[in-house]
Length: 175
Image (cartoon, rainbow, N blue to C red; front, top):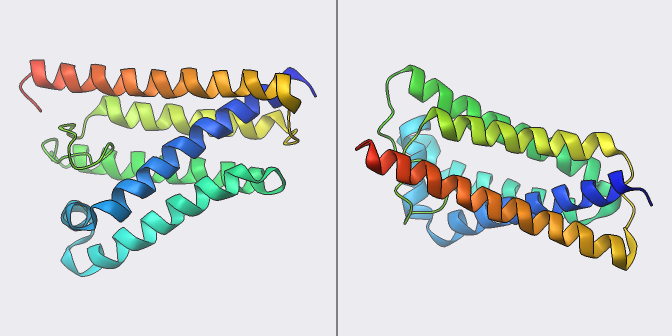
């Protein structure tokens, strides 16, 4: 078991947290996400889209937990994050910067911004980084502890990044 596998497991576990949280928000508050997705897809597609996206996000989180399927989960995670980034970027190019992001649930004040597009892109890069590490076997307990520490640091960094973006938007009068 090399360090690349330990790091890859930490990256994957961070993505498990990210996608499980995203799915949970959609399952818990479908009305909010229906309204949010209607801004992207129109009213007709938004109802089905909420449940479909939540199910895919939950599926990605579960697949990432199974080492034999992790490569597929990492590809799916990177693809989802890049799709989210692309949708955000297209709305920003159309001048819709005031749309609520929905990244952290209905209580978040985050609105679409290039910082969020870059953050999602960075998370996609982390998924691809874990993919190129190759080894998806269990790291054993010492490696597992290091992998958990890596995941915890990434979760902490993600939350801090979100708070910084939110604070910057608030200070600029955007949020």
